[in-house]
Length: 427
Image (cartoon, rainbow, N blue to C red; front, side, top):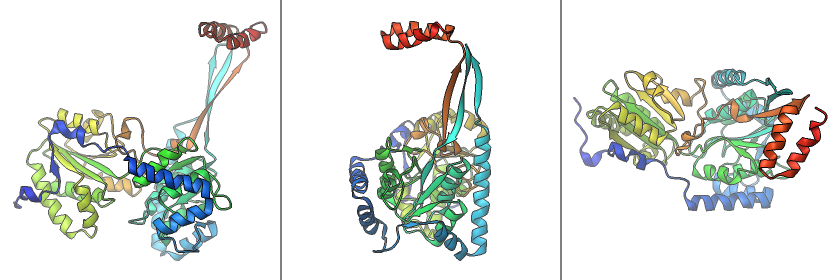
């Protein structure tokens, strides 16, 4: 058996199970919000010059380099990557598209009878969407596919992708996703450009989606109202719920996979097996020493924790209190555990169903709510890009009109009452 790590060398801090809720991520801090607001406002008012200034300062955009690429440039990038890379992007895009189209088929137009006529709803996509993909630390063509392919599956007419310092593979992913434009800008400045538009460069969109760091998340919060947004999708979170059946080495691998995303990522383990944390720590230390991204992963592990529960009921309660973005269920009966939980962005059932397969295109989307937002939001899906619009058509208004008149009078809104009354004589 491997030696257990000394307490001073543990990578994950230990917390009591009843202290887990206090370990939940905090909202975007005031300094980040203020910084993002300055940037978004300067792009809104300063246009292309302001956008270029921020892109050169924050994204490493070369002076004079194009900020926007069109379909021809994306096609050239796709032609420049190896054939096997392009085939990989096409396969993953195909799985994302198939899942999104299946979801789209679950939401259809509706028509029902109501007193005196008919009512219903239509389902229509937004006209234009801006899809953000992180790219500052690592190129993330997977996020391009997750957002832009899903937008197209929903029927969005105009799709813009934004990501800083894109490499040819990221541009090829935008081509595979059939994006119309690529904005070679990141951060709050990209969110502002897509939201408000940049005269002569980018037309404003109706909806901005995609994951990002805390400045991206803050900017989406700031522009909401001018445009729609999907959800808070900030630094990555993973909670592994494990019992005595779990494999400590696989848990360590999954925790590090999330930790390497961002120094602000939050990997956590909640378990009913008191021997598991030390065994996971041993595996973590070994794997971390071999990991090329260990500097980032080590910083993220400092934000994580491990908690031991004396029962599965207590463990499940702690998970629900966190409402994590990703939930890996390494337990003997993962379906039962999932059925007992209310709040998570996406669940991965069993050790074979690693969260990494969700990241890389098994089908469901990897853009998920963070910071506890899973209490009120689901992940990005084809539904994000759709609007359900209701309609009403009445041939007779006797019953409906009388009730509308009477309720309006209760509320002392005489204009409403008179508008209803005016139609009663023709019923």
